[in-house]
Length: 293
Ligand SMILES: [Zn+2]
Image (cartoon, rainbow, N blue to C red; front, side, top):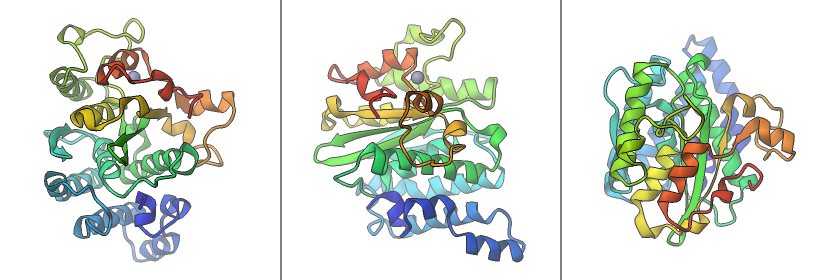
């Protein structure tokens, strides 16, 4: 079942969570109760992994408790980045170094629940990325630390539909961000998605963001790890600007005008136009266009 339905809520309820419980918690002096509800839901997934249809892969399932612990630590500090090292987390048997709160929550969304067979951008993929963004915002509770871009990719893995979600590394500026970017870049090189001589090269603009920064990075790496189980020509995705997308009235509706699409969504950047095709010759960049959502 879709991740929002696994919580027995429709997407609007999942987005807002339980206002009544919030009032109760506020009256009893609790701190930021909605974020605690989200963490409680993650804990419940961990204890009932079959029920919530977590991907049935032992290393993936074994990663769940430590992902939740790290999310709790970051939530308590209202932080996106950890003080120390990234967390080693399995995606379907392959280990990755997940750095930020958004990476970790994106991983939970990527391994929990079943994508419906009739999923479309309108009825599932776009609302899901909006829910992901809102929950990350709620958990962090510090808009000054939020990244400027999130992304959802969807694809068939053999007969199963999957999603992967991630974000870019806008904040903090400087050394911490660059350390995280470098770690992502090293992995892209290892997996053949970037080349060593591109370490300090940008295809965006002069002085633009470097490879590894983008929200597409972990979705691309996760898909790459699945090898020929993925039908590359059917890999699709869209990048979303959280600040704009969460500010509109009808948040879950796919933007339906050119103006709105440009305001809320983003085409693959110059770096992604180089890196994405390295997933496989059948990758279709048009599947990532803001006009093909
Ligand atoms: Zn990009």
